[in-house]
Amino acid sequence: MPLHYKTTLKDQLVDDIYASSDLSHSLPRYRIPREEQAPRHVYQLVHDELMLDGNSRQNLATFCQTWLEPEVRSLMAECTDKNMIDKDEYPQSAEIESRCVHMLADLWNAPQASDTLGCSTTGSSEAAMLGGMALKWRWRERLRKQGKATDRPNLVCGPVQVCWHKFARYWDVELREIPMQGDRLIMNPEEVVKRCDENTIGVVATLGVTFTCQYEPVAAVSAALDRLQQETGLDIPIHVDGASGGFIAPFVEPELVWDFRLERVKSINASGHKFGLAPLGVGWVVWRSEADLHQELIFEVNYLGGNMPTFALNFSRPGGQIVAQYYNFLRLGFEGYRKIHLACYETARYLAEQIEKTGLFEIIYNGRGGIPAVSFSLKPESDPGFNLFDLSDRIRSRGWQIAAYAMPAEREDLVIMRILVRHGVSRDLADLLLADLRRCIAYFAGHPLQHHSSGEESGGFSHS
Ligand SMILES: *Cc1c(COP(=O)(O)O)cnc(C)c1O
Image 1: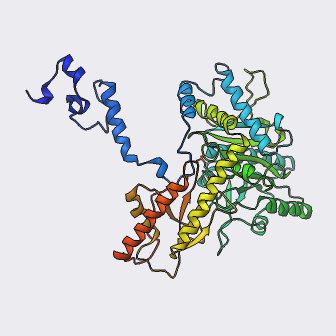
Image 2: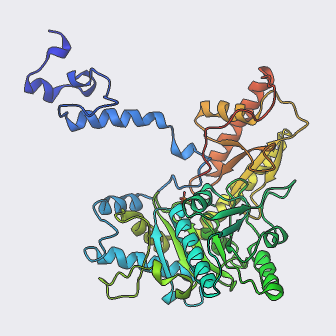
Image 3: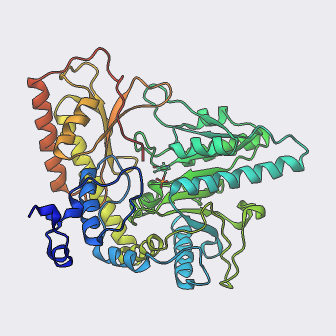
């Protein structure tokens, strides 16, 4: 009897998964099938399809967490059925969210951390939308009181992550993005002040710029804005996009002043799922004080009887990530975060040294003065028989995913590669990567590629 004619119940129960008749077809792609299928079988096939995603631990293009403690996985599983928005049904999850907000406000030196405002989000992108809206609402109210037009708001920033481009477009704000210039790949105070006027809703400074991983000089920008205020009366607030740096600098460089210690910093966002070490799906935004968030934007949640007013774009949201964030705060404490990040910095600097030693690359960022990462370009004079897109492609044959991409406005000529070193990227893993990198270089030396002009291909990576 042909294998696929076995139809009795017993046959179906004892079938090996891969020999079963219902798996003798490709999975449907465009239409929901008519009939049910056995969960074990479908699970196996979907599981197998996911193999093609590659290995997230080897994705060195992402800032996001790809290694999690087993306890975090347990908590996530325990929370899969809890909706964060149901604050009266799940008051303890809501309480845990509130504790996280206060802990972050304290970590970022809010004047009154126990009575500050903030909320969890799905990530820094949503947090940035909320921070940006708060800036816009406050600016609009100020100008209305002065009887001025409020139809031309602008936002001044350096090379920002795409979420700020989205914010500007979705909320009709002109984005005055300071272009890169020569070796200056981030904002500086002069360039910021030049672009500010009475329609500036705020300045966004990034702690850990997506392209190069450097910190923008928040304190210097703040001081320049202080001088601008003395000279012109313009009082322009700062929002810090600390997507990565917000969870690194306080632990590793507590003396670096970038947070609410600066009076002008009114709000901060950070991604819990990046260097906050929480699983994917959580970000945070915290305001300096209640006055920095317009009342109109606050939706009172009084089920708790506490003072936890919130505003957010999403309604239903999973609670596990927030619970896991709290777990991490307790589990690691200040010392734990510091140790993990310091180990990452050491590995990043080691990688930078070793990559430089190949003689082919110019190190653009070596893991000092920003987040634990390395970025580099090909030396303009070197002719190694490949460009960075080729290298990115080739090293993928060993499973490594490393972004190669062109810089934004006015330095589009510069193509760089960036390696993020995060929790779980050990020194040993770095050595394995370096061995593969050298292997690729040797391969191209024997099989050089010709290019008409460098940088015309585009990498398939997003700047997450
Ligand atoms: C990652 C990142 C974002 C977006 O954060 P998500 O948590 O992925 O939404 C915004 N800004 C910067 C600087 C980032 O690195």
